[in-house]
Image 1 (cartoon, rainbow, N blue to C red):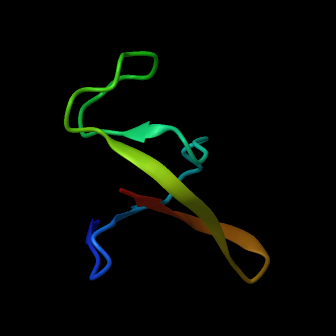
Image 2 (tube, rainbow, N blue to C red):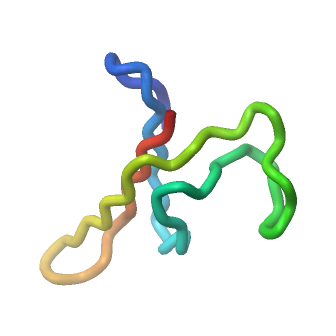
Image 3 (cartoon, rainbow, N blue to C red):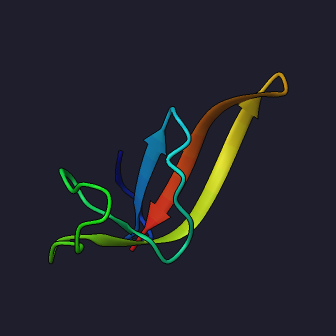
Length: 62
């Protein structure tokens, strides 16, 4: 997890987070709550596989 040179935040989930572009990511937020002021908007969700099995999901946020 961390910032990139383009100013976006990348987060890696090792279980399917079930999120899609337009959702919000915030530390400590529970499902169904209103996003706090520091929440980031998800712009890209990219699942990764290793030997044809799910490995992790890379999520980009702004």
